[in-house]
Structures are given as C-alpha cells and as structure tokens.
Image 1 (cartoon, rainbow, N blue to C red):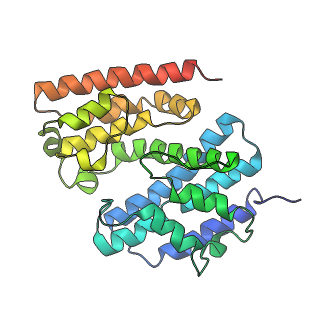
Image 2: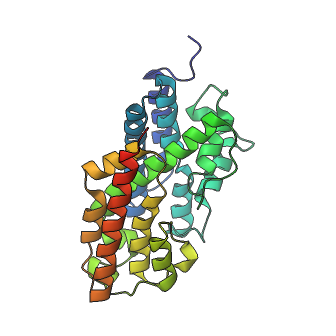
Length: 267
C-alpha cells in the first residue's frame, strides 16, 4: 500500500525516536517536562481535530507526526536559555533547520521523504504571528491544523501548569498588573497580541487568551467550548483592579460569542 504512514508502526517508531532524542535533555527540569507533556497533548489534539474534520487516515497520521515534532526546537532553547521567550531563539525555525538541515535528523523519525516539504513548512510556520505564504493546499491544511492543535493543548497547559513555570510569578502576581493599551486594542480588534506590545504579566496572560481568535477550524472551537476553556483560563487569575476584571469579563463574553458564531457557520 502506497501510504506515508502505517497506522501504528510508523508513528510508534517516530515516538520511540523522539523519546531517545529527549534523553539528551533533563526531563526533571520543569520547563522540559512541560514541553514533553505539551508535545503529546498536541499529538492528541491534532488527532481529535483531524478526525472531527473527517480527514482521511493518512492525513490523521501525518498530523500526529507533525504534532510530535512541532516543538523539537524548544528543548534546545530551554537548555541554552532556560526561557520560552522568542527573543532568545526562534524555536520553530530552529526546529525545522534541526530536522531538515544537512544532517537530515528527520530520517530518525520518518523514513519516507515524500512529505518532507510539507512537514518542514508546517513546523517552521507553526508559531508565526500570521500564517502566510503557503500556496499548496495540503501543506496549508496541515500548517493550519498544527497551529490549532498547538493552541488547543495550550488551553490545558494554562490550566494545569504552575504559574511560576509559565510566568515566573504566582497567580496574584499576574493579576496585579494593568493591561497595556496596545494589548487591549488587539483584543478588541479580535487579533492576537504582538509580543513586543506586552508590558506586564497580565499582558502576557491576556495575550494567551487573545490568541484564540487565531483559530482556523470550527472543530477546534467546538472542543474549546466543550471544556469551557476560555472562562476557566480567565478565572484562574484574581485581578486586583476592577477595571482589569471588567475588561477580562468583556473579552470572555466577546470571545465566546465569536466562537459560537464560528461553530454555527461551520460548513
């Protein structure tokens, strides 16, 4: 059968190779552990979204492999800089180069080379502020899918991981800040927040929520609504200032209305 991925054999082999790669890093490190759990969360999210969309089995398995490898650059970023900040390393571009550079590390994980270009592009662009420049229809599908799966598991991350690991302070420390004007403008425009516009910890927190305007598929919104992710994420932080709490309530209401509209208009 001329298929890229056997339903279990090839993905299991890729997973075993990934586990071997992780042995080069300190699994006990909180940030490394976060990204390991996140990786497998993205694999599950990608499969869930793909199956809800009715994609064929090859595309489901391809989505899982992309999910497995999408953040491979993060581990070196944490090892070198102990940070997730984009200013320390462009982890997506680094990961694509690591996999598809001269050493072709991708062959450790996927023996078949027919989808190298698709996998490389999806990984390289998964954290771009806006997804642009892809003309191939199937590549665009998977680039959109990994971005949705990444954001979907990040909902879980924002609820389960310690705030100290995420932002370096506790929940109270996050809620003490004032939302920067440019950050709030992006929220009201239903857009993701530029990293450079964030000033306080609460800006970071609200930017994690605003990114959910940049979801590609209504199936992803369906899952988010089933878990009530937006409201639960917002409610995790006690906001010290009444004006901040008011803005968070406004954002929650507008985002949930937006998600419901996207679900209703599902084709």
